[in-house]
Image 1 (cartoon, rainbow, N blue to C red):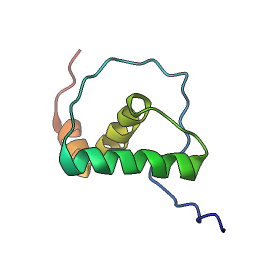
Image 2 (cartoon, rainbow, N blue to C red; image 1 turned 90 degrees about the vertical axis):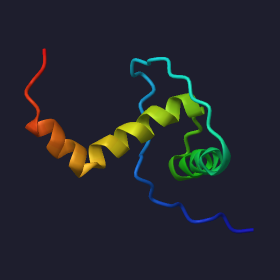
Image 3 (spheres, rainbow, N blue to C red; image 1 turned 90 degrees about the horizontal axis):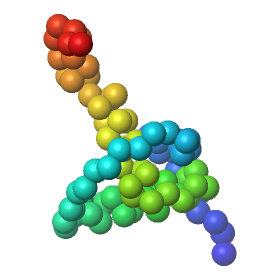
Length: 81
């Protein structure tokens, strides 16, 4: 039996030494299935098995970083401190 070829995902290996924040989510239907499939694909692509609680923040960060509309909006906003 041949091993499936590795797939390049948007997320690479994750450093688990980062600070964490609690977040509760309940996912249903297709999104729950897609997230479980992504978790498996990530493990296969990176030889790193993570719990969803570890993986989801990185998925959200990648989405936010790639959202050009959000980045433009953020640049147009006055700095808040």
